[in-house]
Length: 317
Image 1 (cartoon, rainbow, N blue to C red):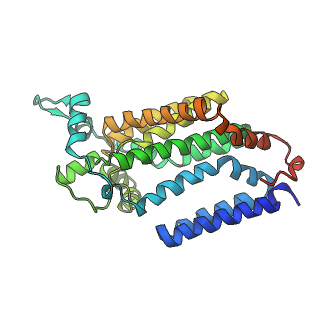
Image 2: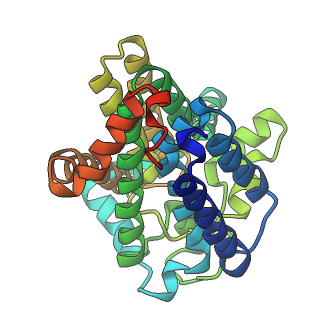
Image 3: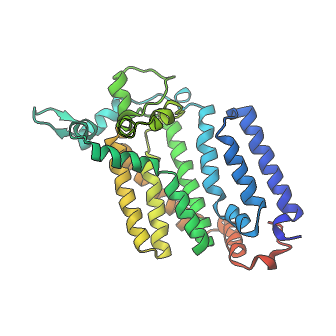
């Protein structure tokens, strides 16, 4: 019996899945997209030695999705006042642009006046890649540096935890909300594809309309986690010594920041705070948690991932 199928290992997996399935059916509510995710977790943990290691290395990427998916159970507007006009005025004050009429407008409004099919396609494609890019980078790290994948995975989760805390501390409306409702409060509303609807029209699809009509975090504009994720990927790509891939990730990062504003999903303020969220997560994990005693389990798991699997029969991980 190999280490991955030791009693401790199987018990851990069973407890994890029982807890997660219980949370889905009793809390979140089962949806069709849960099934492939559940199957992916099971296959990666139990199929082979390599997939088991991948599960251990990247499980916190999966937990990030579980965390964000769980927000639908506790809408942020039930816990704190939603900020609408305050964020809009903040954007005008720090990033406002004067138009030809001498009126001060938000960057969202300005970019709307210069929209083009080319920019619509680029920003739509960029927004579609916000999940695949971190996941593909994680797969690359798995084959090149499993221990770094573990750190990347955990740091990604830390950034999401910080973002969620801010969501509930300071619920904020996105710029498309002001376009649709002004400064009046309409809380229990569906999300909007906003500027991304132009990508749907270009491609003859309803991709973004379908995605955002099911949105459960309408008032989670601050911080922009879309803007935070690429920074974490860029940081660990540089740490690994990636060259061409690093440049591509930097381009993706800048494109994501632009797309967030161009698509009317975020203010520049949201993007800036998303950047700081990522930087804070990296500093907290890499400079404080990892070197401390709290980082001992992570270092042990790192050693385990880097050793020959056959020698870990009794590891019980």
